[in-house]
Amino acid sequence: MTETKEKLWNANYIKVWVANFLMYFAFMLLTPLLPLYLRDTFGADKQVIGLVLSGYAVAALCIRPFSGYFVDSFPRKMILLIFYALTALFFGGYLAAGSLTLFAIVRMVHGAPFGATGVSLSTVAIDVLPSSRRAEGIGYYGLSNNIATAISPGVAMFLFGKFHSYPMLFWLAFGTAILGMLISYSIHPRHREPELNKKPVSLDRFLMLRGWPPFLTILTMATAYSVVSTYVAIYGQERLGITTGTGMFFTLFAVGLILSRLTGSKSLAKGLIIRNASLGLIVSLSGFVLFAASPTVWAYYLAPFIIGLGNGHVWPAFQMIFINMAPNSQRGTANSTLLTAWDLGMGLGMFAGGALAEHYGYFPAFWAGVVLYGAGIVFYFAYVRNYYNVHKLHD
Image 1 (spheres, rainbow, N blue to C red):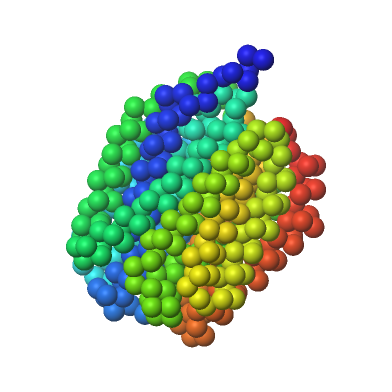
Image 2: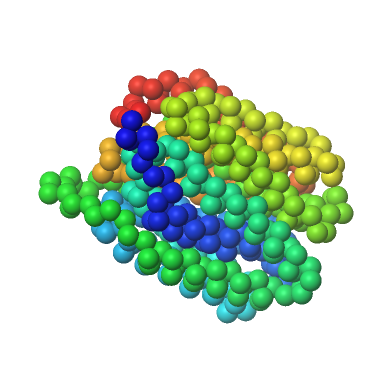
């Protein structure tokens, strides 16, 4: 009985939650406007926009496996502070990027510390949670991303509509990231004893090789989301005449995420991981189908809400799948493997989506994401569910 009364919202958990919120607030503040910024400032076309924006995902993809190794092998707070400081610094780098080439370089390099900070924060969050409430806490931790996603794009579009200043938004993102870094400094994770008999460095220290089946499913979901989220602002302007509604698109997406997180966290606490994942995948796919099939304003706003409802169940469930398949000494590797799948899918969606949209139009790009995601869901139901039940180490 005493385990069930352990405090979930302890001081360190709240600080990690807020630090993660601020990092994603800064990131999402720029996300809906960067395609417009590249078009308006440098005259970039859709394919070039996709290439430039996918650079961060490439760098994040490269660093994620190593960041998992770093947080498992060295003091986690030290690793967190180093990467968070670099993340904040590169938000300031956008202000100094005076050419398309320089902007592309800053954007790409920025992905490395951003990716590593995400792994560090999520791993520290697991450390500061009581074990009896870990599944529930992971579900609520994701709300920090979701609420940032709900608020930040709307704030960005409002400020840009009022002041028409890209530099102001870059400064706001920079200042927000600095505040998040300062809060991270005050976090006190549990002391971990060093491993006395460390295993030799191997590929499995960087990527959780046994996690390849759920890895593929998350990759397909990220690809579908990337195609939609990257080009939603330009698509809304050019095809639907929506000039100020992009913030509402992301807000409705995040509202769906938040609602499903609140209900899904209780289910995860009861061990209903596979049920949450299965339900979320089906709901999410229906939202992507609606967005691709109906070029209307009502679908533009209803689809993100449905996608959010699905994704809000999928992400924490899959995070628990990865964590439950990993030994306790490889929590960082489990988190980084999950995030690597997301980064790879995001990069693929930005790059391939931009090429398809430039040469064939938006809807072939959207449908390509839907088909790939559908294949990932078929693979999940045919193989991943049973694979997890056989290979899990914890409940």
